[in-house]
Length: 414
Image (cartoon, rainbow, N blue to C red; front, side, top):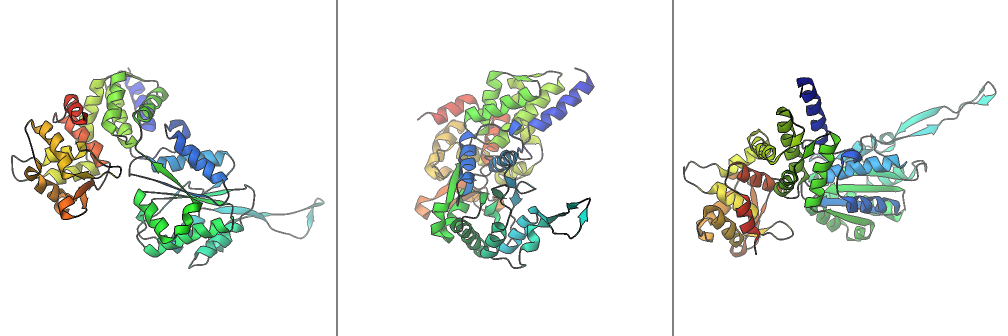
């Protein structure tokens, strides 16, 4: 393969495997068919609004951006920017000013006189932000949105990362806005995107909005969906991949598309660097090493969590065992669930007293914290602060030889 051809393929691979940015084109999107249908169907129903929720890293923003593209192509009015991101400084008024500066409509202005016998009706572009008071309230938002032209018949506003809103009053006013828009049958649908806790916070502010809010949970992706990402990507650039290689990528990803895109990217680039268009399992193995060595936030967080002045310590193994521990539907695990995977990793029996202090340390600021705990001191349960740390820890275990397929099989049995 010539160098010029290699560079062209590198560019193409980097465009289809994108761990750093959400997918915003339906052609590159894979899986999530049920969620797409649920959201699109909800937008058709008068008075209904949508909240998409799930763990960080499961592809909520990508889904929102793809839905924005689908609805725009169907003639629905969507924000010019596609989505609006919340930040920790937003209050209710600043959030809606941010939203409305992205929305505009065309009006005809009356003008006296004739030109060539034809009456002239010049058109003017009006920003919705200009219609909103400086200190906006829910009814101000309702009033402005109700004055939008009826063509197209629907307006969609997608608000991402609502969990970053820290102000309780803003959550309350946002809930009031949903109820206001629903009660007045305003032809605007809000699509909110956030983590599961954001749903509880929002509904807690106004119990009656639950009937107006279609809840669309985003679980981790299935292995079939993750393989679709790989197949779609390699096909788009004219490459092929071994069956066991893509199965391994899907297994390592633990349901997170970010990891599938990362491993897909680095394994493809390894093959291209060797002058091949066929990706092998050895390329995936090399990709795991690349992923854990490249500097990024997960690497620094991981290193902070396991760092110890003691030469012989088991922080690395305990953290990996926490990932492998059996969890409930919210991602929490008990200290006792760490015993089996840790014993398999260490090849000898480990009970709670031998690693309880490690769990406590992982919950302290000195080590991140990388875990959070809840419950009575006698019945503590633990959960990863950043869910995407879990596949990274697994990938690190494989890359460094601490974990292999046989161990994983032993952990999953019973």
